[in-house]
Length: 109
Length: 109
DNA sequence: CATAATCATAAACCATGGCTTATGATAAGC
DNA sequence: GCTTATCATAAGCCATGGTTTATGATTATG
Image (cartoon, rainbow over all chains, first blue to last red; front, top):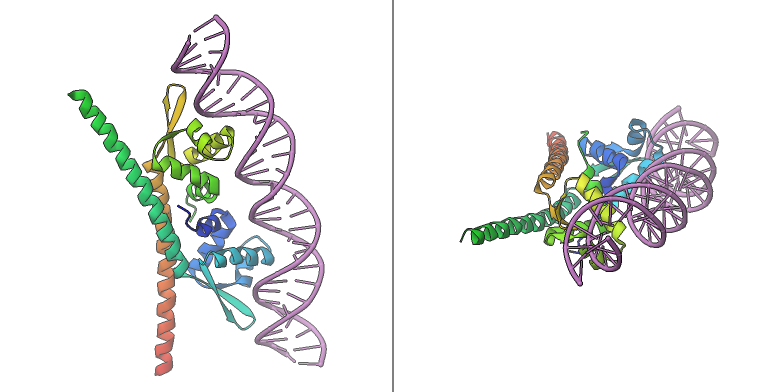
């Protein structure tokens, strides 16, 4: 399993997750986010860069502003990555349970 | 959205994710993991502690060994947390698209 | 054209956290 | 019982990365 994990890393930081949630709620400019959150504008820009590279967010120039939107493409990618991880983990868990049951049955012979 | 996010943080680190994947593949002891991965035993123990506190993993003493299994409980919790996040993000995206369509229609009048 | 506003990048600072070595505690094996 | 193996915790080191201030580039505004 050598899959991409930029999305998970991106969402691991609290303020970056907050940035994502605000953008997810409705498209916002950098200035707007900087006004809303208790961090500087460059910090916001940096977080947006990480989210952008993880394809969770997309920028759209509008005059001097940059409006950020959710990027459903990267969202889907991360979803798929997690689903696979989940699937593997749950399959393994089921196998484990089944193996335990078999052993119990053997013991009942 | 003030939900728990220990799971995401736990899976953000590469070697910790590797530990989780190995445990998810099949239950393993700390010594086994330490032998498999290129980090010390205390490092493994520490990663397992984080995963344990995120309820992604569960320890089961077996003699002097500690066998770690996947914990489907915490797995489900994190799943639910992510699903909500996904839902919100995708809903907002749909609204955004609809709003754009309406504006186009207005322009066509 | 000049001023103001928006944003990205660079540099520097510093806390967080991942890693190692050291150590003690518990359990198995001889 | 003594040695060996397994594991968790503590202490300390150091790289990563989140933050701020400074700066330049681009665009609206007057």
